[in-house]
Image (cartoon, rainbow, N blue to C red):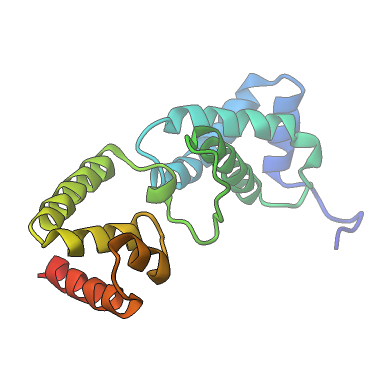
Length: 178
């Protein structure tokens, strides 16, 4: 709980001075907390880190009136950085899907160039493996995993009983893993 006896931190005073136009105070805030905010973004992105750093410090300045005199400025900045990162991911999503950020890894939101290359290589390997299996097995695997069709739908498409679909999927997975 805040009491009137608490003294504001140096970070609070610097932030308020920066908000009032003191560029030296702003430079000191940035120098003090740059490394933590930079690490935060660098562990999640391969590009646009500088842009997000700028947005974060600007948003901090704009939200200075919401910063408590005894709070941690680093924690405040990292909270802002997280919001900036979430906005960034939302804006960069191409498919418009809503993503559960508590369950989704960064690579799924914003793959790095090396992740893109790795994904393309894995896709090529998967396609190569699929093309080496019997056609009916390949079709069953593709319909189940890529098209998310159920056993009954696949059975109707392949004109086979649902139990046969299960055995084809089992055989297809086995061949893929080999």
